[in-house]
Amino acid sequence: MEQENRNQQNAAPQVSLGDQIKVRREKLAQLQAEGMDPFTITRFVSTTTAQEIKDHFDEMEGKPVSIAGRLMSKRGMGKVSFCDLQDKTGRIQLYARKDEMDEAAYNRFKKYDIGDIVGVEGEIFRTQRGEMSVRAKTITLLSKSLLPLPEKFHGLTDKETRYRQRYVDLIVNPEVKRNFIIRSQFIKHLRDYLDNMGYIEVETPVLNTIAGGAAARPFITHHNTLDIDMYMRIATELPLKRLIVGGMERVYEVGRIFRNEGMDPKHNPEFTTVELYQAYADFHDMMDIAEGVYTTFAQKYLGTYKLEWMGEKVDLTPGWPRLTMVEAVKKYVGVDFDAITDDAEAVAAAKAVGVELADAAEKTWGNALYACFDQKVEEHLVQPTFITMYPVEVSPLTKRSPKDPRLTERFEFFICRAEMGNAYSELNDPIDQRERFMKQVEQRERGDDETEMLDEDFLTALEYGMPPTGGMGMGIDRAVMLFTGADTIRDVILFPTMKPQS
Image (cartoon, rainbow, N blue to C red; front, side):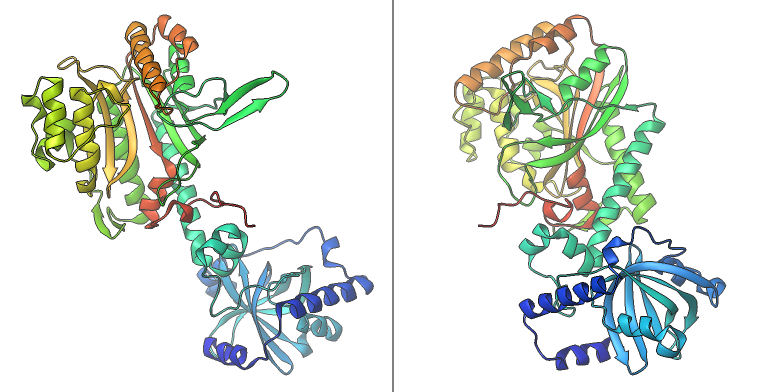
């Protein structure tokens, strides 16, 4: 049947897009003149779906049904027509005979176009060729497609067009929908996982007078009534920790984040994260949650721990390795920062392996350690790995390690060289926090506009007392990229940011 359709399409005369649009509008005008304007119809009751018919055909055969969807193909053979109807679950064949329908209605149906949305009443049966089908009794035009869909066998393949016109992408490339079903499933799973642990979901402001909680460049807007500039949030961290101070103890937010930064296959200016905070816990507890969310989702929804992403085979089997940053640098770079105590020696050791510190960064042991990791280690982290104990210089909101005050109780976890989440034993010392904020201010004055701003109200909150707390942020989009095998973030965001067409 597919080959028959292909041959028919190949044999069909080429009609310009403008002519096709004109013909479709003329058909609509004729329907309206006859008092059958499809756009006046407000409702159609469907009793089944394409997938339900396929799954339960034996029980449904011979039963009356109603179903609605979009016409994706038409094959006419005299007094009999075959069509493919596509609904939210997939496709089912329609079978229409002139002598089984009202003649005028059948003739109108013959004029319907691919892309039109119809409601069908009929019964379930199997054709002589064995195709599960709906034998139509009535076919009602519910909406007229005034623009033709992309040609079936070449489809909509241009990535740029697919992202700009996701609505067409979803119509003609139904496999695309899978990514967004998995995305929805992952977010639901995440919420269920945290809810079952006693967390509560909250909402915090998107517009803020201070951009805090992350090292990132914010989008700036202006509030006319207050006559002040405001920042779209770059993280949800600081408001959520205020709630920990207030005694809510276990909170999370799944929310949109906005960062005015570069775009690449792993970054979009608008993206989704989950941040969670738990009183009386530390970063070890957050590691358990991160691993638990990923592994239970893989097993429950995908049925396996073994995936492929970015050209790599990934094994999510529980028991992910945990390395300190010092251990990771020693393993992959060959520099033992445990044996180095002097700042100048550390910077020299980094330079010796081809690592240069950023101009705005102080020339310290901690910054040298982080630069070595950032430039030389991340590229090796393919299998799920927790990297722990980050330098204090790059962790302004994290509790210091009791064993080494140069380091903090922080981790990031990596899969296929991508950072998938970031977590701390949260700094709850308001005096230490103020000092670190001031260092961030100094760094900002040296030209680094991605450093933390001084948040006096947050310091006030800490002065009322925040319990020991573990907190974590995880990127939803990157998680979905992993679980779908997508190689760009645009494939898992329904409407990615695009430059306007000129």
